[in-house]
Amino acid sequence: MKDMKDRVRRAISAVAVREHWRMRRVLLLVMVAVTVLGMVTVSSMADAVQPRRVYVVLTADGGTEIISGRPSRSMSFGILETRVDYNAKEAQLLLQHGHNVTVTGEEETRTVQTRSETVDHLLHRLHMEPAEDEMVFIDLTGDQPSIYFRAEMTRQRTVQLSVGYSSRRVVNYSLAKGTERVMQQGVPGTITNTYTDTYRMGRVVSTELTDTVTDGAVEEVVEYGTRVSSVERSDRLVSVHSNGDGSGYLLFASGDTMTFSRTLVCSATAYSIGTRTASGRPTAVGNIAVDTSVFPYGTRMYVQTVKGSWHYGMATAADCGTAIKGNKIDLWFRTYSEACDWGRRDCTVYVLD
Image (cartoon, rainbow, N blue to C red; front, side, top):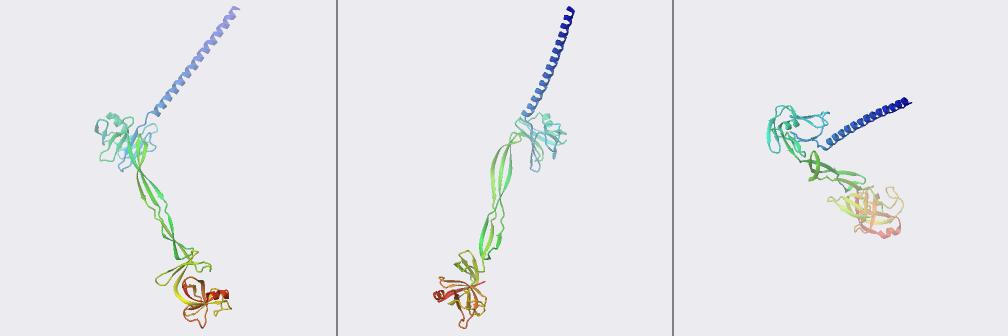
């Protein structure tokens, strides 16, 4: 019985020992994992905190290229080229062999001959490094390339904005109503704004508007017509505009116009409507009797008294009579009473186009 108890105790002790070592191995693995994770985190934080070196390449053609971190494409700038290296976190700016370069640091300026090396290697070789807040300028604009350090850089850029043009409508009283003509084409204007950007470590930290140039738009001018062939009898004549040759136009309250070729003063006698005229047209308001040697049949005219106080309105030469000679016309009215009111009056006759 005693032997049995000893064997049980030894078995329990062996199990306890194995469990102890298993737990130690688990703890060891956890510690290793935590250590590795911490190293990765610290490394990542270091990468995030540590500023990348910023290069500013001033090219021979006056351009500016800012390079920070690994470039997305290869570029060539004479004695300098950048290559895409996916194994490198920083830009690889390679210098060609055998070129004299002036390098200016905080305390000295040296002129050295390049090897087939990166800009970083050249600076390390000369023990000339930029401060943490300084950018590395590689100036290729002069006869001899130079490298120097600056904390700040300004750069100008222009932004051009288009400005629409206005349109002005101009009436032409002699142009047919419904017709439009562009007399002057409109041209958009431009506003050119010049901004000065200030860079630090490759990033814009401030922007200032330094200049504005305005190139004014050219106004569009559209001509529209108001001329009609006839107006309603109720449309009131507002004004008469005459040219030096006797022609002109009549402006009515509706805004419509009618052009005339000449003006005559005639004696106008009123009659009430009868049967038919000598031309075969029915007697009607607007069909008047004339001397056909003065007003051929079909002549269109506008009639008003000389003082403009009475308006007969639109009329067409449709009749003649033996008593109508020279500047005489007979006017038809709807009623005898209207004819009596008019009687005989001196009228201005505008011969319409």
